[in-house]
Length: 238
Ligand SMILES: Nc1ncnc2c1ncn2[C@@H]1O[C@H](COP(=O)(O)OP(=O)(O)O)[C@@H](O)[C@H]1O
Ligand SMILES: [Mg+2]
Image (tube, rainbow, N blue to C red):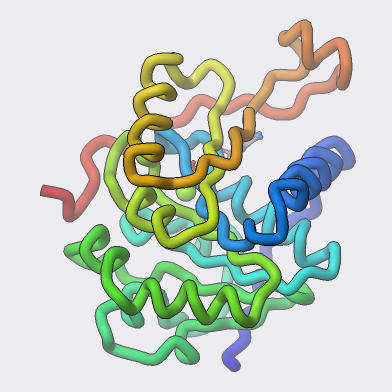
């Protein structure tokens, strides 16, 4: 298997790592049949990629064998954000039949964590994710790993994550505080349910621990607030 070094993985502070531990155990309580999990949200910048990666890392550190798949074929941040060194062949090459699954699978410097990066941006991401290669990949992931965590684009912008989630045991919705209207979240949930996807639950991200009285009272510390940019129109989507 090829290997990659993620040079820029920073360790989480105590509060954040405790939050991931409880997320991990909530997932364990969903049952043994919940092992392939897609992570999505309504909007860009809610924290899907960070949540998915940190959850995968937390599971790996706990001794589980984890495969992280970056299925945000439109706007992947993984290689740049974690400074993955070396020549990387990604998921889009495999899905378009240009290489084998072995060629896109990487072991990392985090024990028990393997990764598949997104690769070059293809012209037809939704079509590629809906093809049989993706299903085959998920099936073999299920055989060899305890958990497969899949990062996806926002469902409010493009359909990719619903396509991915259909192949998964469940989907986790990341919601960032103050970034979304209730109506929009409800629409996204009904979109997932219509696609017959099991919604495992939601993660409330970017909670301002200082100003929020409920969280502030219990945890009392700033955890991070971020105002992101909207994705705009997705590339490749008609
Ligand atoms: N809990 C948090 N606190 C502070 N910043 C965060 C938090 N979660 C994510 N971010 C930051 O927000 C930005 C968007 O996060 P990302 O995970 O890439 O979102 P998405 O994948 O939903 O577009 C990144 O710069 C990330 O570092
Ligand atoms: Mg992302």
